[in-house]
Amino acid sequence: GKSAVTVLGLGAMGTALAEALLAAGHPTTVWNRSPARTAGPAQRGAAVAAATAEAIAASRLIVVCLLDHTSVHAVLDGQELTGRIVVNLTSGTPGQARELDARVAERGGDHLDGAVLAVPSMIGTPDASVLYSGSRGAFDTHRPVLEVFGAADYVGADPGAASLQDAALLSAMYGQVAGVLHAFALVRSAGVTATEFLPRLVGWLTAMGGFPADAARRIDARAYADDVDAALTMQVTAVRNLVRAAREQGVSAELIAPLVPVMQRRIDDGDGGDDLAALVEVITAEEVA
Ligand code: NDP
Image (cartoon, rainbow, N blue to C red; front, side, top):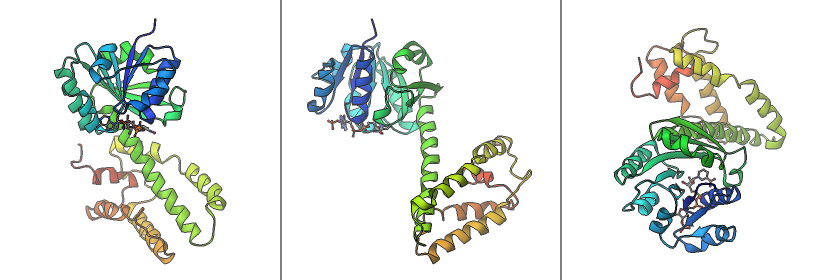
C-alpha cells in the first residue's frame, strides 16, 4: 500500500496538501491548532489527531505547513522525531531552514525543506511545483509522495537552498509587478486605460524577453563591458527621465526610482560603460573574483 503521511497545519495550503494525499490514496493523518479545520479532510478519509505527538507518531513522513517559522517551532519544539522525515513547506528564509534542520537532527529526525511555487488550487496538478533542499536521501526515498503535490525539484543539500531560490523567483516577480503597475499608473494619468495599453505592454515585455539570458551570460563571465548596446551612463539618464515623467503626470516614481542610486554607484566607480547587468555587483557585498 501507499506510505502513511501526516500533515501538520490545515490552513489553505496545508488543506490542499492533505487533500492531494487523500486523493492519491495515501493514509493521511491531520492535525491543526484549531480543530474545526480538520472536518473537511476527515470527511475525505483523513485520520484526525487530537495532539501533535499523536500526529507525529502516526507516520514516518511529516509534512509541516504552518504560517511561519515561529509557528513551526511552536508545534515541533520538544517533539520526539526519531526516524521521522520532516518535510517543511512553510515559507521562511534560508537561515530559518538551516536552523530548523539542526533542531530536527538534534531530535533524531531527517529534514527536507520545501518552497511551494503554487497557490492552493494548483496543488495536485502539473502546474504546481515544489523546490526541495536538504536531505538528498529523504528526497530520493520519498519522491513518489512528494510528486503527489506537483513537480518535485531537488535544488541542493544546503537546507536553505529551496527558500533561497524561492526568494530569488519571488523577488524577480515583484520587480516585474513594480514595473507593470507603474506603467499602468503612468498611462492612466493621461487617460489611457490599462486594458487599452495592455497589448502594447505585453508586446514590449516579450520583445525584451532576452534580458535574463543576456544578463546571465554577462554575470557568469563578469563580462559587463563587452559589446554594450546601452551603457549605464545613458541608462541612468533614461531612468532619471522616467522619474521626471512620472512626477510631471502626478504619479509617484517610488516603484522605479530605487534603480537610480544603484546605477549611479557603478558610474561613480568608473564603470559607466558597463551594461545594466553590472548592477548585480553593486548590490553584492563583496565582488566575487
Ligand atoms: P493560512 O493562514 O491559511 O494557515 C496558517 C496555518 O498556520 C493554520 O493552520 C494555522 O492554524 C497555523 N498556525 C498559525 N500560527 C500557529 C501557531 N502559533 N501554532 C500552530 N499553528 C499555527 O496560511 P496558508 O495555508 O496559506 O500558508 C501556509 C504556508 O504556506 C505559509 O508559510 C505560506 O507562506 C506558504 N505558502 C502559501 C501559499 C498560498 O498561496 N496560500 C503559496 C506558497 C506558500 P489555525 O487554523 O489554528 O489558525
